[in-house]
Every structure is written in C-alpha cells, then in structure tokens.
Length: 114
Length: 113
Image 1 (cartoon, rainbow over the protein chains, first blue to last red):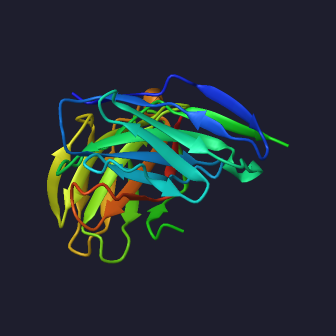
Image 2 (image 1 turned 180 degrees about the vertical axis):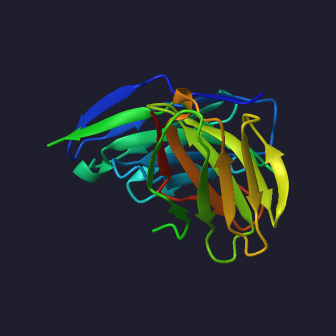
C-alpha cells in the first residue's frame, strides 16, 4: 500500500524568505503522480503543483518548485519569496497512474510571519 | 473557484440521524470523488464514481453510501451518525479517472452532537 509521510507538523517562515516542506512516500509502483495541495483557512483544497513520476525535470509554478528524488522517494516543496497569503495547511499527495485513490499525507501547517 | 459545488456548507445534527451531502462536479467532469477530513488530519478517500458507476471504494463505512445521478451530480448519504463522523467532507471531480487532476469543492462541515 502506498503511504505518504509529512514529518513536519508545523513550520513558520518570515515574509519574503524561502521555506521547504518535506514529503516522503512509499510505493513499489513506477508510474505515478505526486501533488502538493494548499488548504487555506477558507478550507478550499487548491492544487499547488503536480509532478509526473516519469518526468525527471522538477515541476515549477511561479514561486513554487519541487525537488523530486525518485530513488529516495522524496518530494519536497520549496516556496520562494513567501507571502502572507501562503499561510495554510499543505498536503502532499500520491496517486498511482490509472488509479483513483489519491493518498494524502497528514499535512504541514505553514505560517508566514510579517 | 474550482467549479465544484457542494451543499450544504455546514450541517449540525444529532447522533443516530441521517444526512445527505450533495456535490455538483465541474462542467464536463465525469468522475466524482468523496473524501473525509477529520480535525487536523489529512484526507481519507471514501469512494469514487465515474459516469454513474462506482469505480473505486476506500475506507467508507457501511453506514455511508453514495451515488452518482445521470446529470453527474453525486450524493453522499451518512446514516446512524456517531460523534466520530463529525468532519469536513470534500467532493472532488475530474475529467477522466486515474489521471491525477482533481478539483475540490469547498467541503461540507458536518457536526454531530
């Protein structure tokens, strides 16, 4: 069974600085997707970034980028130039290609301080 | 706005009761997923429907059931409610199944007293 582990329950960062959120996963599959979702106080789940396992290039979306280490089964999220609006819960998620069950980690609560 | 609509946004009920949560997927999306998020926890996959048929089942209790109607909206029925069923219930939709692009609604907050 696939499991997703986020070892940092809470983190904080100063506005305009950079922060990295960690995620590891366990799978025997070779073809899968990895995601970071953001859940602000409004509780809406918002897709931040998506990575396909067969792509070696790390995904990037504006200030958000990932460090995907397939052999190490690691998928960290880097947020550059942190903004107050980045304050939220961040969930790492895994989905096997062709599957329908997206597995989520327990989340990391990020606070951006002014 | 993800385009996924969930109603009601908030619901308070008593133990032993039955409630129905409703989800309208994004226009054109055939797959609907239901997730449960208990307090300060990650999301647990409950069930998925694709074009009216059940496609995958996760950790869904026997007291819970769901269906997807011909117009593609979905309902999650929760019966014989217990205090532990209090949670945020999310609906998500996608065009295809198993491709990884899920769009979430704002959730329905259920409180069982």
